[in-house]
Image 1 (tube, rainbow, N blue to C red):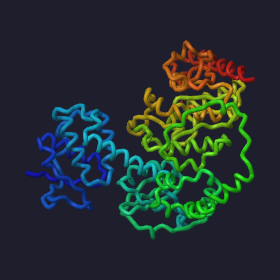
Image 2 (image 1 turned 180 degrees about the vertical axis):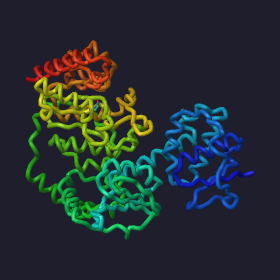
Image 3 (image 1 turned 180 degrees about the horizontal axis):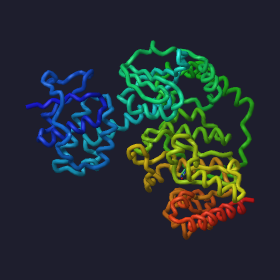
Image 4 (image 1 turned 30 degrees about the horizontal axis):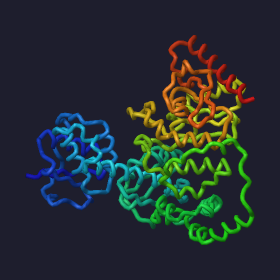
Length: 490
Ligand code: URA
């Protein structure tokens, strides 16, 4: 007998989980479970569908956290078989295959990962390629965007745009749903059409001029560009109207550049560093990569990270990657652990509580922050959502290793005289091995690419100390460390 479940929405993980628990408790095998949602083509047994499956009180099966995380993302995939796949995996995990998630070659496990990855990539495209148009209304200007996601990501990604554009009134219209923010509350509505969004506004010429200015004809890779920014997104992005002209003009501009002669080699110290480039999926972004100009090389590195589709899982939950800040060529380069809550929202390193303490200590040590380069070992905020708060989670060795090529290339481009590791994560990222901070602090050790690394504590260590006397003592030591680092570069 087939048991059919109608879910209330196409990506409602809680509803699926409750129903799946009920089916599991009732012993319904995957082959007998049928799933559908209103609006998606129904299965063979849709006529017989129950309004809901057995309820949420049916006991809580224990499954690996990795499954829950991947399933909560994969449920947004457009594949109509997604609910069945998730239930089949749940069944197998609880019927003698508890390690199923570790069997990467298993077709179900592989499919689950592929679906979660496709959803994350779709979300990345939405973050990067959605463009708002300004529409005057009686209540002021509303920013309206048309976007065509491949998967059911509108609701899940709304939070990203709320955090980014909290002070604006905006609407995102997609074929299946619309999301509206009035500056205080989020409202979901029905889908719409491209005609609901005006094609033009005053900002459009700016986007086009900006794109034309950053386009480097010598690095034109149309194939990679199309892979990174598929054509279907182009029509919503004003700057892409420039692409055919820029491509057509590229050979002539390159010939002119060659005729003008090459750029003189950059004498900066980063030239000694022959860093292996990280594997680059979003190679279209090489269009921006002009390594003789450190600012452009840093911008290209940032674009490269934005284009990666193999980011660690937690990166998809972060608002944005947070990159380093400061002048290329800064004599001191500080490396922290990872962005925290405030950094994640503002998109800047060390602007939260630890950052404020760090600023105070830098000022006291006579190190102007604006003359230093400040960055992190890990570029995304890793956290556990706990109700209203996002609880910081330390990056593990795998996370540090994943971001390391980006950090090392960043260091190579900035070319500091001394790199200062703030805490254990930074020290490990820079040296490639775990090292005790307290024993190493105040010393200079060799970084992986040969640059000198000065070790000290992380400012948040000072914030965590329980008593005031200890805090004052350790703060003074930290200021001394910063002074010592400064003395080494002057
Ligand atoms: N802690 C860090 O390590 N980096 C930041 O940017 C903020 C807090």
